[in-house]
Image 1 (tube, rainbow, N blue to C red):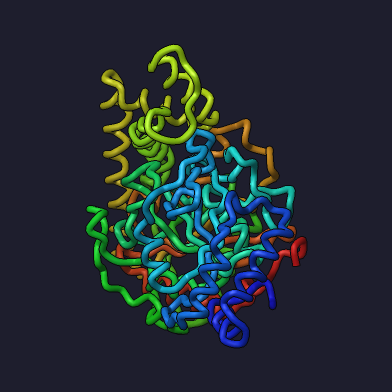
Image 2 (spheres, rainbow, N blue to C red):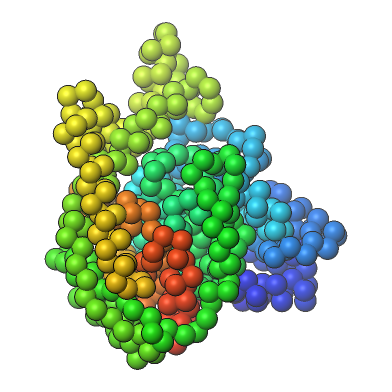
Length: 475
């Protein structure tokens, strides 16, 4: 069995052999892996596949294996969020997206590595060690969904779920040469996802091609009464896979091509825009003047929400607990030992931003900037159908290169976090290479207009071969 297969190809293999055999071959690839992409491999994956074979499940994902980011609850599998503080915690319930996957017949291979509590852009802050990029084992896969992107790129899962708070699906998609979608806020239920920043994050799919992204979205999207922010948009994602961009208007936001962008990244993205132009689209430059404030606004809001959300992890109810002479000592030592450096930094900064003397100066101002950023997107997208820009300003950097300099690491999110502030959909698709490392094209659309984003990405993909390239290190 080829390691890299589309969902359609996996279905063919299941029909030729069995779901159990296909799952076993993926598990064998995981067992030989060098990338540290999984935190937990499911012991029940083969049993689940065997049951599907016996019962003749005919769901849209019948027997197809999938990897799940380790902040999404799955009954019977540890949900560590890449942190020591959730050591031993096994959720007693499934996230809404997991219920939908199981109903569709998917086989869960395991839980993938991630930056601790989804805080990072490199998967280096994980308690379980960094994940390596399959294209170069000395480089990061991006983050925080680095494990999910890396296992897809390495052929250890046909597709995966991640979560995107400020680029955490799109960043690793770009670095690992796969496709990743951050859906419109509210498209996919967040129930059962351990919260980092509720107003920003969304579950999103990662796959080898745009078609498989649409297949997965048709399964996981939709209203959930347990998530008050979810919306039933009734989008049929696979119907958007039309190879035609004639008449499509592309906006190119000049602010996304600022200082610090790698020249090869800029060239590859412009080549992609011109390729769409050759296929019948038109483009124009647009200005989004408040984008320069988006990164600061994003981090203040995200850290503030994290400060509130992570207060529940204190050793009292579940997970790791340190010894202490009284309750206060126990909680203090548990949080000191259980949280990593980056998580502690964000909790402290978020608590400071929310404090009585600084709430208006920082948090309230950040919310006002968020509104201005959203208005920038509204104005730009009123003139065009989609926006195109680099996903990441640079290709994947080396493990250890930026981890000691958090400000530099935060700056790597400069092109992705504005989308989360605005709540619009955004997809990263491979568009080139530099020194053997993938480059991602970011395509953004109007709220709930994933069909336009998918149509543009699918047409570009069908007329290029970047998505067919595979990492030589693990080939």
